[in-house]
Image (cartoon, rainbow, N blue to C red; front, side, top):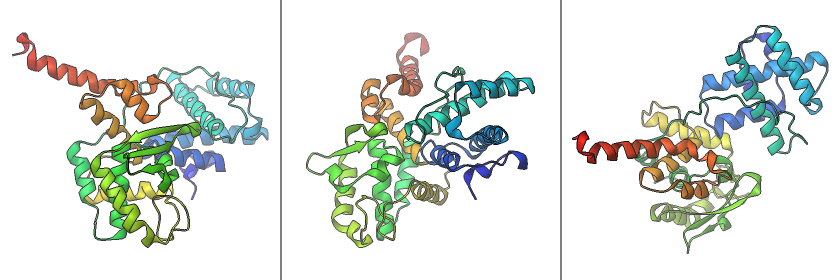
Length: 307
């Protein structure tokens, strides 16, 4: 059943390969909760129904047709909050299709960006990360693969798409550096700590060959092919269930945790921006609440009037 089949009424149950791919991206890479994903699916299925009624395809959408859609929804009594969510859904959807070269243009790029609060997804504590890592059985090839994968996600703050694209030659064991291919095929170099290096070295030298590789990916499934994004998401959810973790987590949770723990340890925002591969520091500023929290704790601990 396609992801886009989750909607609020049978009439709105309109799907497309592009929508299914985008919803998978939101689930696996962005780590959105099920209810949030259902909202996106409903909003975008409703828009696809609008196109279907007009006999139009996604490739036909331009700014004028989007404005007509907005006017129509307004005339049907949609309130400002719902419209802001609908606009956000459209901007995200068309932005993704354009970035992935699934559409030649982004018709939503000039839609007014609603002022919505950006909430930081769940971040793991150091203890929760340790529990997830400890849940992997290092005596089996799958367990050792999973432990190495989780260590690397946490050590390098990788997107799941960057993890699946990783090749053995992207890792320099002498320097302890990983070459990462991020969005837009932009390359960045990320250092990883000693523990992650030890696991990655042993996995590549002693365990990876036991998967009988047929593809050049670092992390392989039982058939020797590279793990998919959904497979990695399922692996992480499995260990979360094993450890009794109540939080909704995804591969992207490790990326947020990586950035948050670096800032808590004293790293500056510019360094975290470089390590995450953010083109604009405004994308990294979502983590500034961490610095504010740390500064408030220092203030309470050291200001004379706080004693």
